[in-house]
Length: 188
Image (cartoon, rainbow, N blue to C red; front, side, top):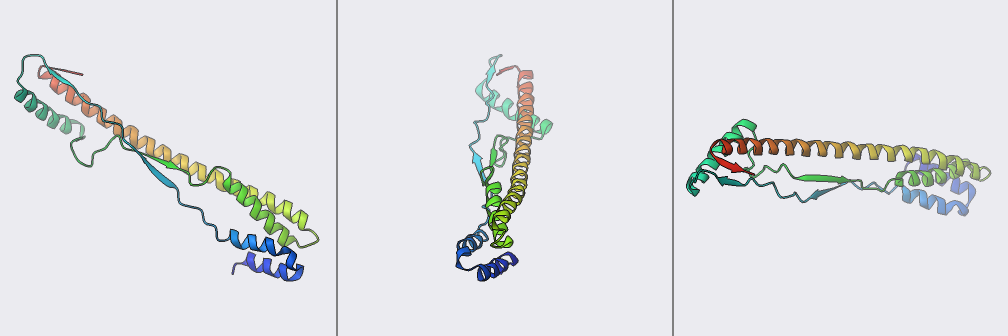
């Protein structure tokens, strides 16, 4: 049994049955755990396509050969191989906070008020309620701010990784287009 619960039960014995609902709420609040953050995968947009048109009457076989050779050259130049199964530069992940903003502040205020009223005793329960509620709200507010900061940092990391993936994919497309243009094709 935790220290807070043992203090609460000691107060109930002294105060009587009137504080029993407060003790029950306190006991139930100790059982609540914060759910883990949800990670939701957003469908990746379709990759950009490179359209190639022969300018000098190249045959379809020549076009396939040139596209393959230019693909190998672009992979060598950029280090990006979009033909690999695990290559997905457009995949995005969005992290959603598990609790709404302000939930920890409200929970802290309620828990602090209950604890303050119990600890203060029957004569100063009102003052304990106010002081405990204010203290709990401050602590809950700090927890809310920390959770929001963590969510923003995680989203910034995801956005950075996505931007790097897109930049790498764009460099591959530019290299492929330059190679095919040099071989007499129009690329769009």
